[in-house]
Length: 353
Ligand code: ATP
Image (cartoon, rainbow, N blue to C red; front, side):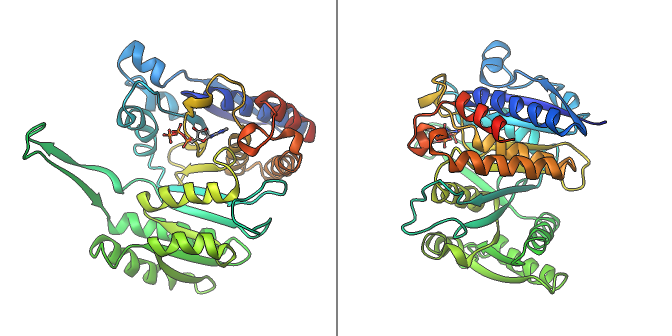
């Protein structure tokens, strides 16, 4: 029997509710499949842990995570702690040292889910957004001087390296190549950001030569928001910088119907370190503890995790079950306009499996 060891880090807010649902669903799936076993170990890291210890995760947290085959993550953030502490203390503290440089976000309109795009339906929106996940605008370079004084100054330096851009570009071209349309859109803002992003454009053109069967085009990020909204079918695979893709993927999730559905994978494609799988939404304090968090994004993240672990048949089975649940309006949580609760969706998913 194949065995995969998973570190579950539910984190904060609804992260705890959706990861519990995800672990239940994946455990049921493994039992039904019979060919593999998932061994979950839970880590109670996050904002509550910070309030007890002054750290979001223990000093040897990365050492503890390293032996796992994958990390199943919920969300991070608390109303009474600054976001930069919670984000840098846990999520980014894992992504960067584990060199999870490719952040992959599939977006589709699932049957049964209404898209805010007028007249848009299933198939109109079937994208994969590839986000550079280690450098760029979120490299963490910069500083503040003369705090509180009128002359206070702050810098936030975006870092683009040839090695970093080339590896994400190759990953994006490979991702596009593996999809039926073999079509990649490279997003930049190279008219205004004339150093780092001009280098992006140059490296995209170089890497494109290695993938003669992939068609590609370029967009400025501002125009990209219009194209995503007005001509969703004209896009397939998309690659953008850390900041740009962060924004575009929230737009993509909203266009697909709900923040609660969209999954993401933080991949270390060379598999030197575990990769991390999570829904794209945050802690959602407004609904925390109410039992109505939509677990579909977490199920779908689990589907991406199974693909990464080589369990393709189980991943396909899970995706079909997610589609069945999405198509059933009695299993829609309030964010999708329904009355279902997290436990109902989870039971519905397991029944569909
Ligand atoms: P962040 O940590 O990114 O600041 P957040 O908690 O402010 O996150 P988002 O995750 O961006 O919020 O979500 C915005 C809103 O969308 C939430 O406040 C919540 O109402 C709704 N939402 C997000 N995810 C879900 C979900 N899984 N189920 C139901 N509603 C959700």
